[in-house]
Image 1: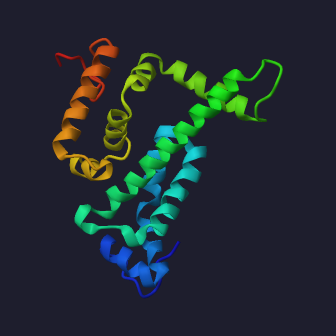
Image 2: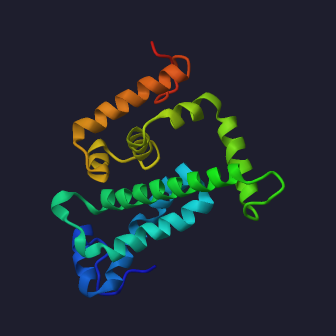
Length: 199
C-alpha cells in the first residue's frame, strides 16, 4: 500500500491513527511501516502460511479498533504486537481443539482433507527440535509470549510491557525465569547466547 498523497511519510504513528478516524486511507502508512515485522513475528511462532492470514487480521482488527487506541497507554507498535499476540493465542486454542477432535476421530476416517499433513508436519518439526521444543511447550503462555516478543519481534522490555499490559519489572522477571528453565532443559547451555552456563 502506498501512503495517501496528503499524509507525510514521517508522520507520528499516533497522529496517523487519529487522522485515520476521518481519513481511513491514512492507516495505510501504518500498514506499510509495520506489516513486515508483524508478519515475521507471527511466522516465527506459527509458520509462513498462518502468518499471512494472522498478520493481515492483525491490521484489520487494528483498523476496526483504531478509535479505541489510547496513546497514553503506549505506542502504536506494541499495540499492534498486542493484537497479534492475542490472535496467536486464539489460533492456538482453536488448533488445540481441532487436534483433540482429530485425535478422537476413528482411524479409518479423515477429519479434514489436508489437515493430517499439517499435523504430521508440525509434529515432525516439534520432534526435530527435541528438548528445546519440549521446554518451550512447558512454559506458561505469558512466559512464552514475553520470550517470543523479545526473540522474534526484537521488542524492548518496555515495548513488551506495553504489548502485554504488564509492569516493566515483570518482563525482566519472566525472561529471567525463562532463561533458567531453558538452560536446565538444554543441559546447562544458555539459550540466549548459545554458550555454557559458566561462560
